[in-house]
Length: 143
Image 1: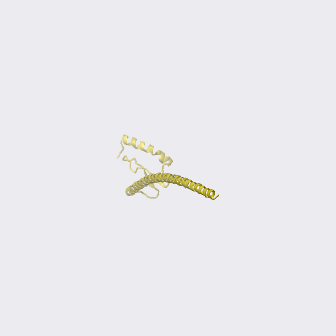
Image 2: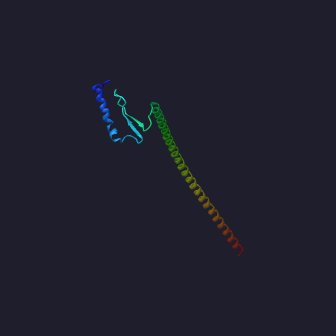
Image 3: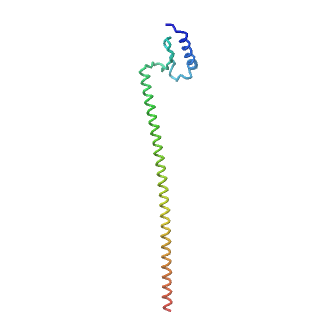
């Protein structure tokens, strides 16, 4: 079956677009070879084939399914990491709040203790002053 001029032109354009791959081979992964179209009936798709082994359509679809599963797994892992980071940030915020609360409680306790110590010192001072006054009164009475 002969190609029309339009089909030949389209085929040549496709061949030109793959010429850098065919000539340079820079885009072909190591261990693979580029397989050109098998017939002249307008099929212009090149295939990569692992060297020494032909790939069937079933293997290709299986590979695509595994690739899709891997992408889904990676997306789930990414989502999990995002949620985990959100939980960690929430925990950091709560820890900060707890530290601030503990500091406020510690300061309140220190103020309370200082006030109590001051009152105890005043009471002790009054007691000592009264005891000294009583003692001097007692000494003054005995003279």
